[in-house]
Structure formats: structure tokens, C-alpha cells
Image (cartoon, rainbow, N blue to C red; front, side, top):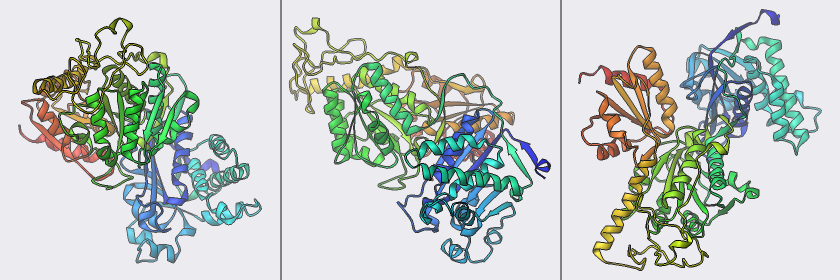
Length: 620
């Protein structure tokens, strides 16, 4: 009978796991991602958490989702809609069905579709599939019952047995996609290394889910295979999310610069995992302090910077509001500091677990006085490593605070990442004072080529000094209220940031760079969706290019040239037009179209394609 099963080969597939917050959907999704990455598939993931800490079980607001896109070749996004939906209860089915393709396979735990469960999910009919108009293939598996039967002699309590349901569902999905269970078994034994009984129970249920699919064909017409056709560059790979990549990039920069890394932080969704990850690496000289509030987190980092450390503070949008005064202290004192802003939905506490790009103008201008600060935006989970490294390099070499923008989408999302070699990364050389400068030295003595002041760390003989938040004389370093001096210092601080553009790479244009009819411009975590939209439009025969900004302040030196080159330019961003407004301020004589969404969700590639097509078809 097994020989009769048709196996269809696909170039890519999207799977979405969904259930209650306690159903382990994030773990199941992460494991399927790891299994797929290990066999050579490219992956892109999207964890979709509820904002409630723990909503009542079975309710619509408590549904947790995890979507993964696996492909034979390069994968840029987690996909618009899924080919397979795992819905562990009626609430998951009701809220997640909208993400299904018309031909998607739906897997449910039929034990969780009782009358009471349907009422919690606000279904009015006894048949939820009829109510939603679902005509897809549905795999109804009594997952809860089979888990109880499988582990009845394990000695585990009912609660522990109930927690294995996600592994049954994962096993069933692994069968559907011809995945080798040995990788999943290894991951489980590593995760539960200190609880071997739990590990073996989950391994058994994982196998049971796989065998259920193999023995019954799971009521589907075929199974699938996504081979790894594209040869990846040789090296060691791992599945990494953006927050962990950011933490690793900070560690790498400290190692390269020969400095201790200090993080002053306060827990805030979705940035907290950076603090958690860095706290694990005391053996590398990393110092982490969970402060009493956001202000203290940033102020302590400024102090650590004055003391000579690579100083970092991590937060999200609400925390940037609170940190702004201490950030300004670093601006006027001209001390290196990296501020990591993992953007989330706002304003106020807004949508804590969702993603937006709405902090851009805040990090550019949200401080009192003329307060120029470099801003770099990471473009993907794996790029967070490089962006963090470069933020540290610029902060240390140019004696300035730097904002690193990521967002919840790339911070929690993951991708396959090749472990880099540190020797391949550029040196980091802070502008330390030298003994020959001691005579006549003042705290704001500068390198005339880039206007960067020299760094005298405390204890350096002959360089005793004071700096602070009051304006200082450019000549003596003493407190000064002289109008001309304040004008000069304001200009010097701005010029120092502007001259960073001299060492930045030019803005790269992808796609039809020479003759595009439309240039798409974006920044940050929307890169994958904009690239996919460009690829689709080019497949349709249209001439489209993409310029995706990493450095936003200062802009790459060729930005104006790029924007003026194309007949139509559209700026696509997850806010109401902040980058578009900033570009209009910085580049005169450009007409910019806009595509703006503020939904707390990633862009949908097809919506981008439709919008960009409409812009291209409009008469000039």
C-alpha cells in the first residue's frame, strides 16, 4: 500500500503550526525548521505570538502561530500563505485558515474539536469546516488520545503527556515531507538532556506521529519532497534568529576591538532575548546588568563607555523614549555607545509581539537639541550579525552613539546562517590618545580628517579630564556658554556624523539596475518581501530594481544619484511614510510614490506586486 503513495517534488513549501500558547507550536516549528536546514534546504521563519501573556485556553486571542518557508533554492520570506496548516484546536483553525492556500492540507487534533471547544472559538455550527467554507484536504487525527495511549506506561503525569501533542503533529508533518526523524530525535535529546524521561517520551510520540502518517496515508492524496538542489557555500551552518545573531555580532566586535562588552538593559518584548543570550557568555568577558529601568540601562552603558568598554543598551520603541536623555549625554560627551532598538507595534505599549518600522523618525530626531546620531538597519535575521558588528565599529571609531534598528519580525524569525570567520571582518581601531599628545591635550581635540575626538580612557597617564552633559569649549574642554562656541560644537558634532559616509559602501541596486522603469526603495526587515516582489515582477517581464538601505544616517554618498536615475521610485515601509519623508528632506528634486502598511504583520508579496504594478501602469 505504501508503494502506491504518490510523492510530489516541490521547489518550496510553506508550513504553518498553530495552537494554544501552551501547545508548543513554536518548538514544533523551530524543530521542523532545523530539520529542514540540516538536510540543506534554505529556510525563513515567522513566529507569530499573541500579545496576551496567557489567554484563556481555547480562545481566539490566545492562538500562537509559527510559519516556515523551506526551499530548494534561496528563500527570502516565510511565504504569504501556507501549503500545510496544523491547527491544534478550533480557535487556531478559525484564526489561521485565512493564511491557507486554496489547495492547502489542514491537520487537526480531532480530540480538541468538542462542542465546548467550538463555543470558545465562537463557532455557531457543529461543523466548523462548513461554517468557514473549507473544502481543503483535512487530516483529522485523534492526537490527544493517541498520545495518552502511547505514553500510558511511561510513568509521566497527565500534564506532561499532554505536552507531547506538538511532537505528534511534528512527526506527522515530517512524514508528509519525507523528513528523516533522526535529526528531530537528536534535537529532542539535546533539549531535554537533563530530563531523559521527557526526552524519550517526546521521541516516542514523534515516531508515533510519523508512523500514523505512514500507516494510514493520513487521508491525503500524496506526500511531498523538497530536495536541496542549490549547493550552499561550504562551511558550518546553524539556524539562528535575529536577536541571537545581534548578540553574537556584539561579542565579535568586542573581541575584534580587544574590549570588554557591557550591556545595560531592561527586559522588554521583543528585545529581551539579546540580554538573555549575552548573559550566557560571561566566559568571553561579557558583562550584563539587568537594570531597574530603561533609563538606568542606558545611563549605566554611558558610564561603561567612559570607562573604556564597548557599551551597549538594548530595548524597543517605548524604551527608546525613556533612554533619549542618556542617549543625548553620549552625543554631547562624544562617547561610543550602541543602542539596539528591536521595533514593535506602537504607539505606547501598542502591539508588543508584532512588528513595525515606526521608530525611524524617533531614532533620527527624537531627542532635544541638535542631536545627530548614526542609524543602521538590519535587513534579515542573519544580517543582524553584520549590522551589529558594523554599528560597533562605527561607534568606536567615530566616538558616537549609534542606533541599530531591527524589528520583531527579523528578531524572532530565523534563517540558515553560515558561521563566519572573524579574520574576514574589518579591524576595529578606536581613536585612542597616544603619549605624544599629552602636552597641551584637551578632551575635544580632534582628528582633522574626520572630526573625531580622541579617546582617553580613565587611568591613562597624563590625560586626566572631565566630560558631561553641559556644553564644553572646543579649545579647553571647560564648560562654555559662549554662543560662537556652541555654534561651532553643534556643527562639529553634525559634521563628524556626516563624514561617516566617506567610509560607507555605496547604495547597491539589485535587479534591472541599468534600465528599470520602477525603483523600489526600502529599509530594514522588509528586504525579503521587497526582493521577492521584484523577482515576481521581473518574471512577468517588467523592468524593476531594488535599493534597500542599511545605513540611514548618514545616507550612502550615492543615494541622491540612485534616486534620480529612475523614472518612478516607490518607497515601501511598515509605517505611514517616515523613510519617504526623510528622503525628501535629504534629496531634493525627487518624486516618491509610497506604499505604507501598519498592520503589525509582514508585507504580503502579492499585495506588493499588485501595488507596484499599478504605479508602473500610471501615466507619468
